[in-house]
Image 1 (cartoon, rainbow, N blue to C red):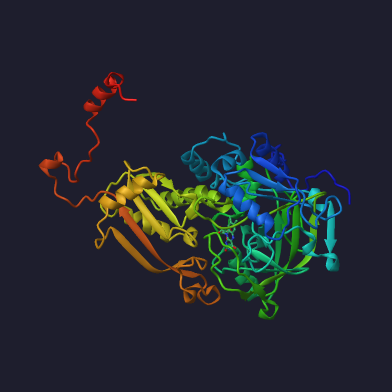
Image 2: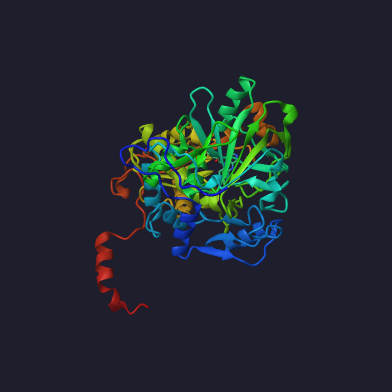
Length: 512
Ligand SMILES: Cc1cc2nc3c(=O)[nH]c(=O)nc-3n(C[C@H](O)[C@H](O)[C@H](O)COP(=O)(O)O)c2cc1C
């Protein structure tokens, strides 16, 4: 099939043209900043590729494009390239968000906080590069794609690591785009981890109630803004394509799928289409998988499986995937995107709840947002509890915000030594500075969650006991003359006039 220039059949609106952004434009941007390594030496898809990705993360190397994969020679193979590690640094995230590469973390958080709330509808075009090749029926064989067996303990080849999963709400017709893991279990089958409280899980419940299979499309490779938003809890009922358009400043050009009533980016690299049946007889074994927690902690189960009816792809496509699993010293793509998005989304949640005095929100990449630090200008006792209550009541807390640490303005939330100091001297164990919130919905993938509390098919979600650490200075003490009339002791920070004097004379002291 020959490529045709996308032609708009929808209305992009007053002279607004669809974006030309795609995975290839993103790779070109990263390459221009020296942030891409192209690996032309032969690399095996079976464990070697995943291990190279892990070591590259340990060495803070850039994004990787593998273009010589054992068994998938170019140009004969359907696909001979894999792109990964693209989002695994704040610098690369900044570049892909169209910002200065050195944009400081708090500004990245402000950026997503602003743009997550904006919308620009996509436009449906007649065709696009993703229709260069269309394979249907018995010709579909997913093993013809160079899907890595990422980690030696994975149960199989995980095709959905950074695949964007598109489903439609059968009631209001709104599409959802989310990232949910899936493993190849046959030439045309993908078994998937279905968590009912995720947005596609809500769609799934509605399709199941109707007794109909759920149409689904998985997109492997488009502009990473898709990965960033599909992997983030954009509110239910909002289609992530609308938010992607707002980020990119132009409507996302979509094409209709061949065999399901769904739309996918016209310049996506690879798309698979199909259905998931509600019949448990069709479920397939899935797992285990090296998860974002850094553990291979779940036990294999029979889970819903996508029956693939069609594969479409660009000429010489690039498969997009990611090595999951945060470890100290080698945080991956999910970690960095969560570090920014989970902080931005938390900030928005706090603002919507009317929590006053939010100064900064920080998520260390290695925690993926399981731990979040909120810096406040404290206005009343109990302020930190307001922060935790707001975060824990939000849908975005499903896999995140198990630990909420609240600090004062003088404690840098991005500095773990500062947080440690605040916990050491502003927190009294046994008092209400540490509050547990047991039996909350939570992550079924956390190795510290007992297996009985991870039964998502029965419980609808995993269960977590959440904890607030209020590391702010208490307002409960009486003011003391010895403390300068304040109600909390002063620190040993030098007096300003002493510091001015000393710094003014510094060169005279002869200290190197
Ligand atoms: C790389 C990556 C892999 C993920 N894998 C899963 C997964 O297997 N299952 C899941 O429920 N969520 C997974 N997530 C988190 C979801 O994508 C995230 O919760 C998102 O908000 C889901 O979209 P939704 O809010 O529209 O349901 C993953 C996120 C990323 C970035």
